[in-house]
Length: 502
Image (cartoon, rainbow, N blue to C red; front, top):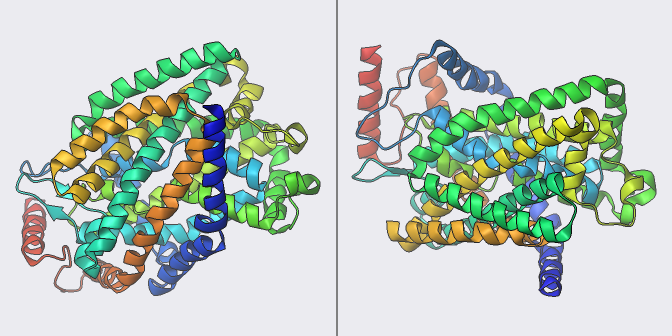
């Protein structure tokens, strides 16, 4: 069985390195981000302050003051923060910790720089996806919102076959993502508990069955239950990680300049630091930086917009601004803190890994263990499973909605959920290298049809954005809230009624 998985991993890695995550894909993703940045006139820079002031700041104030969110009872939607939390649950996962460690081990510290590059342009890509997702989303007779690239590709571009391709790729990517996340949960707990191979396998089975049971209980409740769970867990896990990482960097502050130097030198050196680790070149830093960056923040994949589209906000741009903050928090905050922690603590040391295959889970956990001892191990063994588990929940919803669209009925979504939760057990006991390689492949396959949709509908993004900011500036213009006239009128009426009540 091990030989079989090794052969599959080699084959999938060949496809990823030479086709899906080679120079063409890097150019497509980067090109799309640059194109949208120019078309929106660097909106991610011009409107970054608005993004923060209209999203996380008022939400924190509401939480502090104990205000409860009120919504239309006829709609089975979730609040903007719950939608954001569900999307963050899908993005802030093991890619931010184990994925960063893996990218640095494979592509050198320079991979982190290319994660930043992908994230800078990904800010506006994610914004554009969310605007299109809400503008083209549908609402059924029960008040459920459904949105995502498949809807704006079909109803915006008019290319239903391409929309079906995206839905298929998203369904497969969701399965892969779930397996990756539970695999990381399993690996982290195994590393923290034992080094004995037989005991590790027992732990893996226990983890797989436990995650399977918990996920099944939550996903039965749909996006409403996922949103509630995510909005409770996500703030706690992100804040805990940030605090712990800042404490470590406070202790190792003298090593921070050298860490940044390694990142920038590695990004532009044709040989990785320490004399060319395993012969990797600048291309490997770019390949793993972009792949892990997109794996982490999902900008360009079109996945997180599926959760954002379930938001009860009627303004596409408002949820788009949440998308900007989402990518910023995911990559520029969490991923950067992870990289600096690994570099300043000595967890990342080429001398330790030269000529051997490193365990990404062990590398990541060692940074916490080195500074906090057993307490650090326990905290890490708590944080990473929480990161991974919320990602499992979010991607169960992405896959469910993609399957519903693909098969044209809710039965397709139900069948997906059954398969999804069962395969979580497989992910817990399967080779780590195989599941990561497999999901890299599916992520790339998702990105292509989504980016075609985003670029093809870039004019719509510009018009909807201008419309919102014109109205925000006091201009009397007809609101652009939905691509469908009847839904646009409905949203206008609800916004007017809410304004009258205030």
